[in-house]
Length: 216
Ligand SMILES: C[S@@+](CC[C@H](N)C(=O)[O-])C[C@H]1O[C@@H](n2cnc3c(N)ncnc32)[C@H](O)[C@@H]1O
Image 1 (cartoon, rainbow, N blue to C red):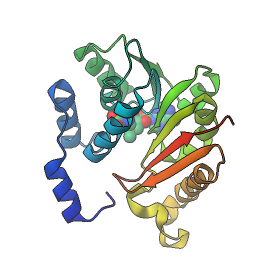
Image 2: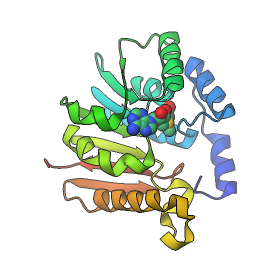
Image 3: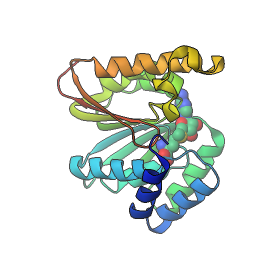
């Protein structure tokens, strides 16, 4: 979290959590430290998608299906989400949760490493939510941009990593320096690409919003 404690506490107090089965998954995941999006990012995603009302969403990093199920609420009639994950335990919980919420006809899971899967995808998406291994974002970016419709939005979670990315390289522990360099390269790319209007917000652990305004 990047904001001061008193701001976080206040926002926690006023921002409602999800309801129903989705709310149960949200609460359990926070309690068990399952790495789903924090509630302020939930509110941001809900806001963006309620304005955008997409037909096709691609998510990279499904985990237990929380953000897929959240986003499915904002699809237009007949819309679909394709999501990717490679981690068996997450996949098992994902399938259980999607079944519990009867979302099988709206959410399709592709199992495997997104770095192998993305180059094989050709469908276009109105929204792409990138929330996978942070060190791989720079490798996944060209595919996200290729698969994103012009007029579409790329939403990227955890781009500031508890603020570490804003620190100087020498002030970051050695074992985190590769990811520090890669994320800085990623942020430079999305903020200097003429085809994108990009904003970087200090919500959660940093969220980047990229609007693809022209063909690449
Ligand atoms: C932060 S969690 C996703 C949380 C989820 N979006 C939510 O908020 O409900 C990241 C997920 O990405 C998956 N992941 C990370 N790198 C991946 C890759 N290269 N290919 C496929 N899945 C990946 C992990 O297994 C993990 O389940």
